[in-house]
Image (cartoon, helix red, strand yellow):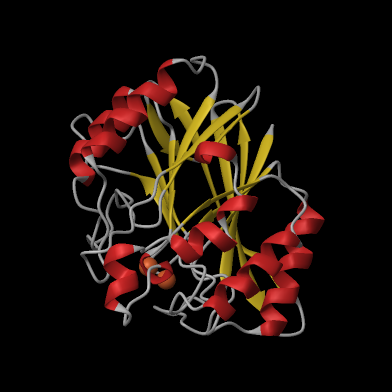
Length: 269
Ligand SMILES: [Fe+2]
Ligand SMILES: [Fe+2]
């Protein structure tokens, strides 16, 4: 059994200090095996915001896997945006992440992919090289190992949900992801907590997608508050506890979604 805490869209610069302290307490109390942080650590990619996000990351003792989001590239400084888009992210955040954005133990293998791009203001993209990387990285991982990918921009929608902007080349990436036997995709960006199997691949159903809300920022959307996801993985069973912040209570479980993998697809329980 493994537990992954997925934290997303912190947006330091537009964050709430009380919610941040409660998040640190909740994550550290739950002692996850891995903390996956799916981008938008800052609001405007400023030095002060990155420094604050670094201090936050340093207070989490568990292994961390971090990918950047579109807000982690400078927006208004066009020279920095186009010439050195990830310099600040690399300086402040990269040292705490897992080497090569890949975490692997006896039960889970998790790959982080950067979908943030300097030429698109908000949207993301998967490169041809990253699609090849998916096949390469998971080829040597044992079949019984649970496989997951972390991106900022979603690659798929839960079945039945209206489509939101997905990362460019997501269909091509999803086919490679299904071929590689990847079970779960973790993403952020839309600030909405959703889960379900994705229907966007031929054959469908073999890949579970989990979108995260904004963990500590005031940029909440769609009636969701501040949330993060606690994912319990026990072989072919996955339970997702949606942890929502409440005044005076901190982060508490607000919903539970459970799935079982059978006959090459995910079924809700
Ligand atoms: Fe965001
Ligand atoms: Fe974003």
